[in-house]
Length: 214
Image (cartoon, rainbow, N blue to C red; front, top):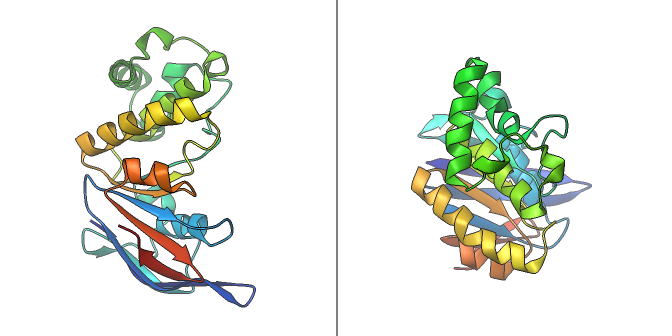
């Protein structure tokens, strides 16, 4: 379980987060809603270890990981711009995290191919990611995030770059894949319809306070 305990963060004399407490269980998706600039992405970065809180602690499975660097948390983060490597083909994009973890290239690519098959992308394995549609690129990004079996998946406006039809089609697929793998997922979005279609629970961040929406 991911837990935030009394997390506080100030920016320009205002609270983005004020003594925030939140928990996310394995296999659960929790949505963070709020206006632009409310601090949603900042909170996500604090969880990832990319930004320090002014006060408070981050726990995973009852262990304090507040001071643990990002690369040792074994969390995965997905961005709205996909953040794929344009110089690599699809299978090498997905295998990248495993290779970084010192798995041999051959074994990493075999696992990547198996993961791509789960997303019906195996026929695109040798394609450049730049030739894929937006929806296909986002599925590659999710496959890359999941293949390392992260403890927590952090999603920052994952569908905002896609058109409405693609967004709707991908929501259920993403929810199913994340739930099946039993990963705790925290998703930032400004779209409440999207949040309700994917998340088991939703909270709104406003003036540094987190309020349960459902």
